[in-house]
Image (cartoon, rainbow, N blue to C red):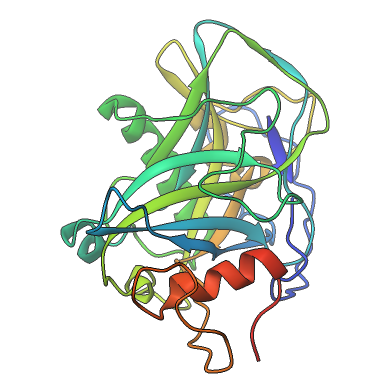
Length: 287
């Protein structure tokens, strides 16, 4: 259930992944080594639509991808037992956005090669359905891992709140070699400017994968065949885990496009929803 995916039309960013050192035994006597230079993850709006039955809301389908063009995640085969959870952690939504009524209403690990989507793409085989994990003890443990990683990395900023944690439980069997991206379906109030989701331009956060087992959270290792990592070992070598750096919500919002046709979706307005119908069907930006 771990590591690696991509999107061809994303901005290229040639960052390499380095392998981590062997985990040390016993209590650390020096500060933990910094994580290796990790891939950078960004997100982009790939669809923006309205639902007639919810006239006061709009919906953004947001895709998380690696800038270097490599896969974001690729599954490692493993059983998922009834007492286990597969977990994914993302940075919190900005406080101002939450105050305005923005909320995440869906999450998936989806196939990036099947455009366009209406709503969320189908979950990758062996994964999901995903649910928001609200257990305070579980979220607090994920936050501990994030804090250790941020301290070791040095260039991550403190989060504005608890991380978003999504997951699904066993029993199940995760198949090998399934490649997928992370997607969120976000509901915004009608007229909300989605650029307000990225107030921390240039600042870095972190996303990570975890295994929950009998209430304990363990970090996913960076390579297949290695055991999940408890917090004490993670603190000695954060780079041994499936963590990525994340540019805080650089949501790539399509600009207004004078050359595009007008009110395509028939809602009486010429807006981004119309533009994204074109982007979805033709998968090309307007001039």
